[in-house]
Image (cartoon, rainbow, N blue to C red; front, side, top):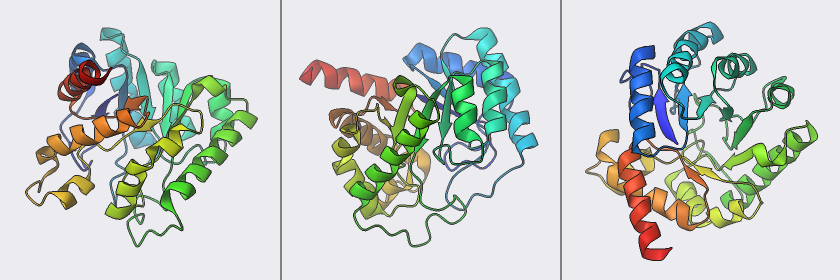
Length: 259
């Protein structure tokens, strides 16, 4: 899953893609490089980020989705917490709702069921503005797995088809470096819940904490690929990345070596 952020303040690529035409070109490039999905977002959820208005989010993502769909057949995901944005995105041509709040907003479950779209349910402790302020768990793998299983059950109860539910452990969302490492080592427990797993660790701060030379997000390609390969080995069905060509290449080599 390739990432397109239509935001000025995303942690890695804020401001890199502005406007529908650039978004469409980036999506074409990602699809040509091997992306199975392209994820479009209009609100930064980096640590410390403040929310934007729904009107601003819509203005950023809907023209971009329409432009991508007019020029490229790659399946599109909308990265949003808002049911209204998800509904408008599906009307414009998206077919997956990637929600960092796991459809906990009022009306979100019902909206997703009515839309009939695929959904990604992600774990996050707190909110982006405060999630990195002393996150705590009894056992991060057990706690995250329990949360995701409960949200999947809620989605099923709301009428969302089982085959349309994906789970994301939320690397970096209300988690310390130690929590993130434990989650990566225990990713198999999330996969064992029986739903396909999406892993989003591309360019994240944990890589910089492990390698002091990776001061900027663009310095973290090697670590991003290492995490993507580890996720694939642990049973993840999709990795959400900024660097599509390089990650696809690494996965191809991994598959050739190990099957």
